[in-house]
Image (tube, rainbow, N blue to C red; front, side, top):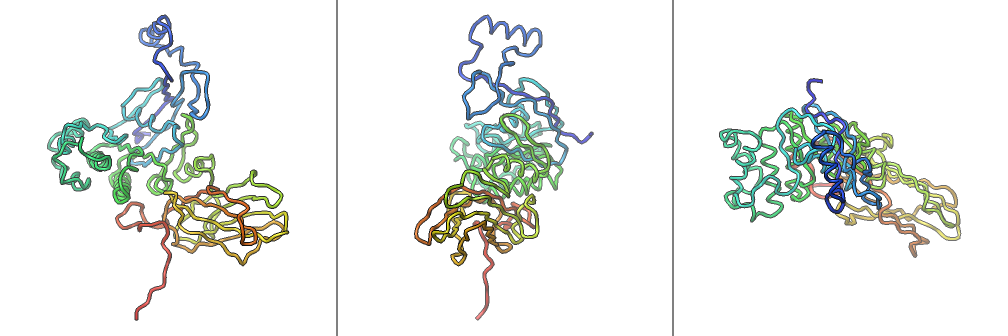
Length: 419
């Protein structure tokens, strides 16, 4: 199609672990002759292994990316997700021309503004103002064009007081503020943002997400966004790409991509998670699941509708009375609150317990549940602090719009009155 702005064909990137080189001069010469003179594939890369960082391999060549194929159209916002070491940052560096591919081809139409690491593209001895002009020149913009955008960039970054200070004296948060402001406001056709926004504070992250939404939806520019915040990916992006061990595992809509990533173990669970390991002489925990009351388990969990948490557990012994208690944990690992109903005693049979959260109770974000099984209100016979993880998505407002998401993790609807 004519509106394809990024086309990736059979893209691969290999790295050598340990010392650089093949080990002998003769093999180094053979590699040079084969690749540089004859233009053929490197013969020593044929023994390369998949980039699985959790296991020890037999080869010193690993494929950070292997045979990646996809197309991105103009105006699309694409979320690139995957576990640490999946190849996300390598892919963005290849797209940004920071490094070259081992094999394959990348075709790009238009200029790219990249924010890959804190301070990327900045000269530490230059001031913030000088670095704005430097970045614009690298993107091929004229000085007049940069000057026209200068006040807007400085205002967005929020570092006006230090704009004429060398950036080597900036904190990492100030670096990111100025770097994102430059990348977002200079007139490039493609904006690439890695996970560096996590360095910024909550207010600036919200501001950046709103700006990226404006860029893709309002200005028709293409955005590539890497994040571990699944709620942000779902709200901001229309498409998603899932990478696993350097290979393209899934390519589809953002909701489908996040669902695939969660089910494959990216955050341990999805909307439905079944258990085999929690089975003993007292109980068997069968499953935990979550959904909006009038939707299916495959649908995104929306904050503005009633949410149902279903626990399926079988009690094998009725010598004592047993109860369930949950702790809700936020993204920072902090317990928000606990919830239970001690009037419900688990029967000596299969039990399906449904706990309902009212609409507009949760803020959008990622949450974890800790489960406690309590014997006769006296002692816990089972504790699992990371048993279930789920994502709640904003149901009616654009994530990142100023004052669109209130601070905190829950937003209970309290009763107000006047005296």
